Amino acid sequence: MNLALLKPVDRTARLPVPLRFDATTGRGFLARGRIVGLIGPAFVAAIAFVDPGNVATNVGAGTDYRYVLLWAVVTASLVAMLVQYLSAKLGLATGCSLAEVCRDHTRRPVRIGLWLVAEAVVIMTDLAEFVGGAIALNLLFRVPLLTGGLIVAAFTLLVLRARVRGRDSFPAVVVGLLFLMVGAFAYLMACSPFDAGAAASGLVPALPDTNSVLLACGILGATVMPHAVFLHSSLIGGLAEDRPRTIRTASMLRFVRRDVIVAMAVAAAVNVLMLLVATSLPVGTGGSLESVHRAFLAHRGALFAAVFALALLASGLASACAGVYAGQAIMQGFLRRNSSVWLRRIISSVPALIILALAPDPTKALVYSQVALSFGLPFALVPLMLFTSRRSIMGVFVNRHRTVAAGLTVTVIVLGLNAFLLVRMFRFA
Image (cartoon, rainbow, N blue to C red):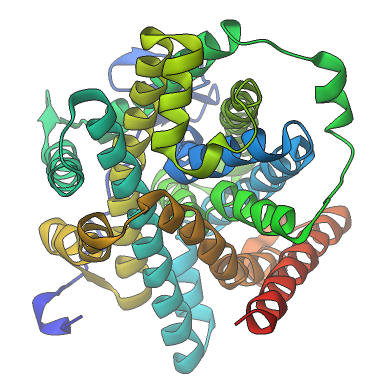
């Protein structure tokens, strides 16, 4: 990207924070309504954990392996909860995003490498969001895929630019779409057969073949999203700056912890419902989102299929908005420069539009983009663990020993899965 097209960042003009915070009660406020302290930045970041990549991988796991990979969905959700808590705690302790902390505490070659990986992650994320949203528009309204991708791009720009009564509309729209997904998948689950005993057995880890390992890695990449780590720390950093450390310790940490637990639990429930709903389909129908929709139409009726497509559309639109926001936070943090939202959207949407125009099976590209995201995860996870374990950076918020142990375990698992995939790719290349 030509840096001449960018402008130096104004430190007094952060990205818009999705809520205000009452430091005396530990409660959050969304727009003008009080939401009893439960709606906070984690709900904005949570949309990244239920994006179209999650739909594709979870539905594929449900149709191909029934309940066998349910443990992978639950484990990935727990990992996401830990990672997002650490990200939020970093933003709270420093008043900065992870990207800004990386810029201030790493050497130039490392900083540039981390920035390039983060930008690649945003592009892969956009691919999933555009493809998912375009497929949903095609299923609902027969809109051509390429046209659907352009509509998704236009929608994100409209939401990010719009202001209602002087407030940014982005947080309210994203959280609203998240709860639309919750309602849609709850309805689908209520209309689907369910085997409680088989679901319970699916909580026992098992990987029957190499393809299940690939799918498990895709589930991890789709659920623990690297760009969400940068996004969440940026949102919390905006809340934390200009507040005394004593106030942050007394009330904001409690709010952050509660916010993360509730938001990630909501996202986890949606991911589990995705897999459970898909188990009602015949084995092998998860080859593409289009084939899943056709199967729902044939076995569950038009309303059921339409609700599934609507949930997919909500996922694509909301996560596309969050992707642009995350890209802005990454650029601002690593380079101390702001880029035009229009410029970012144009650049990051090009690969997705090419896939929509040329790829015979966009869903397959969507699933592989999630696997690629799992390779980008260590480049966010390792710095996050290192920085949150340094007392010189975190102060009283520094990680405890059990948190460090849990983070190291997660990092080793991610690196192990990535190593397995690399070996498999070279062996069958």
